[in-house]
Image (cartoon, rainbow, N blue to C red; front, side, top):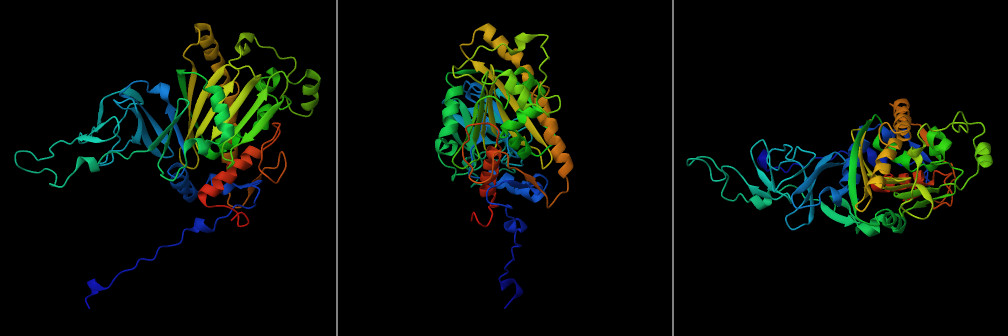
Length: 432
């Protein structure tokens, strides 16, 4: 027998992460390792962002007509969202099927097709390959093999699903129907916000030196807002003393937290904030009180509402400010937060002006949001290299991860980690 005839069997090394388990079954502990470990980050990109999940891509209002497109990011994969000549929405990987170059280099635009600058492979608005230079060669030389089929070399397509003007994409055929994935609590509150056609007012892009999951933890934690954000507590935009609710999706990964304004009183607020350091300043006044003038879009008294959809979407209503936030991972120690502000198509000019004025509350330098970025940066800074310690998540109690009729709780954070662990294969042994 010749050496070449002997079959070769390559041993596959076991993945060390297969033995990694969550420390407890009710997710009141989170290993700091998940924020810093490169191998965990790579598994997240594969199992979460390219796995059986629905990722938020854009608003339909951003690509209103055939040929309109927007470039986005799903995990670490560049993606184009586009409107086809037939009016349908398509999404495809922004990486040439020939040699891997970025095809669409503009953030927004309108084009019937997209040529790659490197070798001029040309793609239509659905990502199909529609033109190849020198396919038959040049002057009788070169060219592609006779069996070359352009239809087999289009850009990788994502599944696309739409809801209330929001565009979602998935790399996986195993992702459930979008409505099932979202669950009734998310659907109910998306219905509340996206009650009529929207128009885009503007954008912010913010880079934060922290792991993407720290941001998702932050927005799922309602009670921190009345402690971290002096502005919110002092001027009543949000306080934990207000009436509110904390609602979860069936798997725990998505959440709705909201508060109802003017449902507390001065005496109760002063009592609640005893012992905190400068978080409620009863004698502060605004030089320009019109900043917080609020003409409700909805008639339920909710002044502060955060919807979060695992793994990358936040929708907020803060007084008259409406926005989506797309979370884009940048390695283990960084993220980009992409804010899209919107109003309604039928808004009068003064309502649009009020929305734009209140943008000062949020965004990279907002009176509220800038503190979130710094808080999670401090966490990332202090846990660098930590392999064994875990966070402590017991506000609101231990045990079942269920809805709460208040906002003094971390139950949504525990729900996030439950969904995360299941998706990553990190469930504690008792859960398995």
